[in-house]
Length: 580
Ligand code: GTP
Ligand code: SPV
Ligand code: MN
Image (cartoon, rainbow, N blue to C red; front, side, top):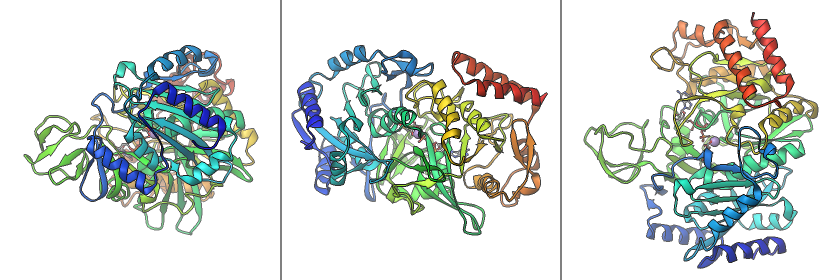
């Protein structure tokens, strides 16, 4: 089928197990895409929206987000999955999955999708094959990963044991019978019962984060839930920044930021996943993905004009509302006149302002290829990647965490990541707005023991020829009424500017035990609406709030068992003492 004996044998095995009516090797040729889309329209999987190649897909109403409690790491040893993952014995899991997948494609077309993650032709490139019975998954994989004949050539030249093999089945979409299983030792992914993004597009979170994090641990690199941007300063200097924020906490928005400050320019390399490797003079990063799977609500001409214009062509919208003239709509876009008819995300007839709850699902998404983005960096497809000057960690923190601060050293930087917390969002099922620890924004995505992962981060200090600076940022500080006190979005360039000036050594700092803070004189907020009182809150640390925070971090580390690196626990204690 693909001309690689062992892979062909695996594909034959899947055919025998799942018993499809047809098998198609899907390389997303123009003819294949045309046929796929017309088939999907016929079956009601997608419908055309107004504009150029814009499509609407409506999910099953129970299949709209990642399901962390149905996501499993099936390593031989439970201790390799660690205290934060759901573990399943690989043999028991295989038995269950074999049962679920038996005849599961009957009457359906099986798509075999060879894909590559990362630009082709470099040390970062990895190959995978996803087998699926979902046309929506096939269409999405063609936008989110590299597919085509070049990929099949690369796959042929790759060691078979390095190829990630994923098998996905739509099943009955019963949330209680949903399985997203990862087998790090055999590089396999088995996903049953969901067609939603992170559960079903197996190149993304399953391959590029959960399995890749294990591969990275074994080979001295990092697979992270990070955006990558290229920053140009007014003097023309280029710097590169990677930033980890949890799901639906602002990666896409920062990646596409349009600066409100003259002379500062941001270009996108990636908005969700970064692979980072030691290079000749530091840490080099690529975006393994080929597209954006962005959160729709909140995306507007004011907050993210770049994303909005990107979605004007060649985009699949999932679970958005639709106006009577066939345009996608979601909360955050300009409201229509009260009483205007509109279809909600489930296709129900509603009217604007009827008080019936959100019209688009809070986790509705758009899928567009990277090349749709007007602010894509020229380096986006460079197989060597870009050298990272700074790493940012941030979450939704209503209190305590300042707008921006710099770690004194790598250990404190790793501590910033390891102790990150954020209010939960609609990107995963469950309660929204609950503060939880989400180390490096990888809580749902680290494919191995989180304590070993912290150790691996610390050890990068010994592997790397030079270390990026590490910063903590927080765009989500709130007042007592729950209102954001920082305008966010384009104005975040002010924090990025300070970070840039710290990289180049242009500005001094106010040193505190929890990190270096900007000097008030280095912050010119003249162009934005923010009170002096808010600036004070955003750029200072409250000793009693921090005492509470540090105790919460200690408690979190304790909850992970005895294997959190001592270096991190010791540093927390040292900061407590320094704070007094
Ligand atoms: P995933 O794709 O789930 O990993 O999310 P992401 O981190 O890329 O999040 P994204 O940028 O899509 O933002 C999610 C939500 O946060 C959107 O509704 C944004 O409008 C909102 N948001 C992003 N940046 C800011 C900000 O600076 N301030 C405020 N208040 N909201 C923001
Ligand atoms: C996230 O939840 O962090 C996402 C969306 O980026 S998904 O691909 O579904 O994981
Ligand atoms: Mn994400």
